[in-house]
Length: 195
Image (tube, rainbow, N blue to C red; front, side, top):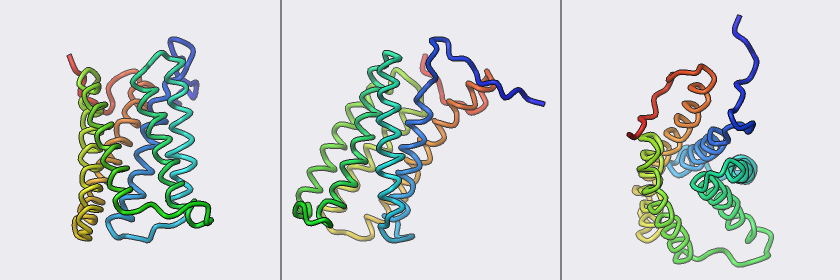
């Protein structure tokens, strides 16, 4: 029978990256299932955006700070607050607290997140191929979302949703690779180390 004893972290703090990657990935998949036309924008997506995509990623980012990982801190806390802000953009107007964001406002919002993600992509060039794919596909996702809003092209939005599902799946894969490789003490799921 396999031991259920958790793997001891070398610095006494568990690796928060799998939590952050899975929180980002699963929430991204669900939102993009909506963008692909599988179901409406609903409370399930908003709840995931607030609690798992949002809060869980912020927690992962804070733990990354404790581990002295500036990249992890910046990425996880930023995308955690991205999900919280996106939920706010959707929910706050429903309460009548503020006007709904204009289409031009959404284009600017998505384009800026795309530029931010593109900048972080360059940090992944020193990390591993799996993270490179996550950040490259996320950069493309933000660009396609901004273009979809700018053109009003529903077919492009549906296509963008499928690209977003791929992006989300790649983040979940990377998170699971971190967990399984650590638990088994060997490469179970390769991430493509950079030399």
